Image (cartoon, helix red, strand yellow):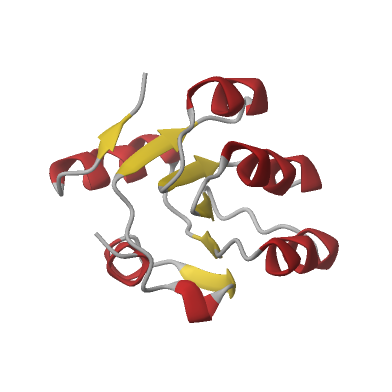
Length: 114
């Protein structure tokens, strides 16, 4: 599934990286714990989190995550978005909760990692 399809499905706003919405995503990792993301993430994944500080983008970059979606209506500040742009990581945001996002993506065939 492409990021553009996910954006539409989850009614996301694109905060950074609109030019990369054609990227394919095969797996999802969801957590507010960045150590958990680092332990389980693989490249080509979508990271879902409510943690909007710069550590979320640092974690995504280190873990090779393809894109980040912030849930529960949270939006990071300009410094975080600028850092994401520098790293080439698309950033989206939705008002949906993490549980709801995971359920919708699972129903569409995406799988989590463990």
